[in-house]
Amino acid sequence: MKRVSTYLRLSFVYILLLLVCTSNYVSGQSSTRTSLGISFPNTLNELQIINSIPELKDLGFEIIELQHPVSDDLIKEISKFSLELWIRTDLKFSTLSQINHPDHVMNALVSHIETYSSLPMVSRIGLTSYSARLDAQKIHELSSYNSNTSNTSFYEVNTISNPNLLTVINADTYSRNPSNAYFIFESPFLSKDVPILTTINKGGAQGIFFDYFWLEEAMENISYLKESLKAYADSDDTKLLLPDLETSNSKNIPNWPTIVLLLLWISIALHIKSNPTYRPLIARYFTYHRFFVDDIMRYRERSTTPGIILFIQHAYFTGLIIYILSATFVSDKGLEAFFFHFPVVAVFGVNYFTLFAIAVITTFILSFVGLLWLYIPSKSMKHFSQVLSLYSWIFHIDFILVSCGLILLITEASNTSILLLVVGHFLVWILGFFFAAYDSSQYLTHGKIKYLSTTVGLFLLLLGSILIGFFNSGYMYDILNLAFTL
Image (cartoon, rainbow, N blue to C red; front, top):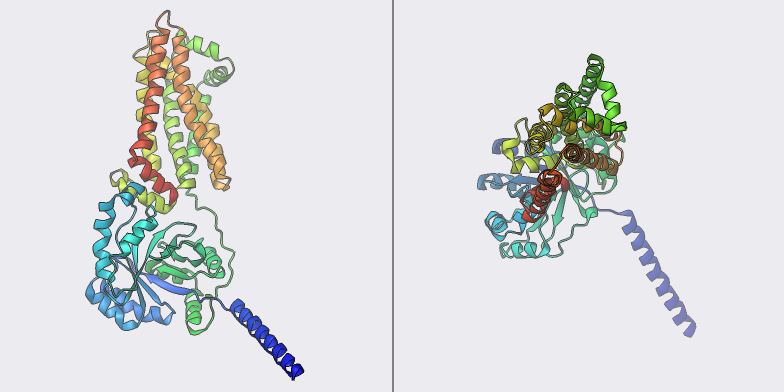
């Protein structure tokens, strides 16, 4: 009897181990099926949305995202298709100060939450798009406005990584685990989206959303995409089957920055060729600076042409350096956020060229102010060509710094290297002002300290005040911080 009892115990342990191992094997082999969603922009009318849903459902799409405002009639029509419905509010590009302001968030979101959470078909409500992050306390507070019978949770659309993440935020756990993320591909379709889509698909994302117009363009450019979607809808696969393609994922650098840089180099070459004394003066400024200053201050070198040309070149170099900085650190969504808050300056559209143009114009203005600042209080400079030469000749360094910066951008070098070159460019600009003030002060018989205080001292005081105001006011800082973090 004792032997039988022993056998029974051993058999029980064996069966238990077998069940555990089998369970672990099955769980290891299985994975969550990636959900497919379609995001409809507000530019589509209701009839277009309703007519496109049957085909999208045949292609395996299970989630529809609409953007506020959404009519009751549209929701009623969509409810016939047994699809999950997400609705995103129109609160976008909000800075940290705006997010932390109770009225801004509550006035924009509470009515939407109360309206949409009362609809049984709505499973999730998008609180913000491309904005500063809501904290857990505010999420919890907003969840109290959910309908009593609602199981609606919240999400926000933001750029945690590349591409943009449509991150689900549960009202209870407030989880932002990227492995459970929903990715969204927004219009326009780009060739680099193909390898990104393949990478996301292999990573087993919880869901992938496509902007309606992105999907249209993608199916026109990727011949196999529609067939892949159809096969995915008809199978039990957990991932969308996509062939690997060797598609370039490099930055799409436009031609105009290279053309502008080439024209600037051509301009200095023509200047050197047309003015025989110009090239020796460049060498003298950097190697025998004291003699260069003496020639200028004693009015032996009188031409204003080199200084004018250098100021023009410097303005365009500053425009290029701003382009390099923004192309490196500011995404397309960051650009949208910036011009969303400053629409009046989007004279050439929401693009990097507009930032370039703004930088060129601003540099012209600030440089001219700097010239007057150096010239008016000075009693040692009798001619405007003198201050023009003393201030501008250091700008020859721009040719090296900006050329290296554009090369680093094109070759996708480290962001740190690009940032150092950008800082170097603005440091050269500031040093040009300081050196001009110091050089001219050496030819004053009296009042040197007063002149340097009026120029360099006042400049440092003004610059410090601007920086302190920039970081303390929060307005400009928040907007730029949002642009750089998206």
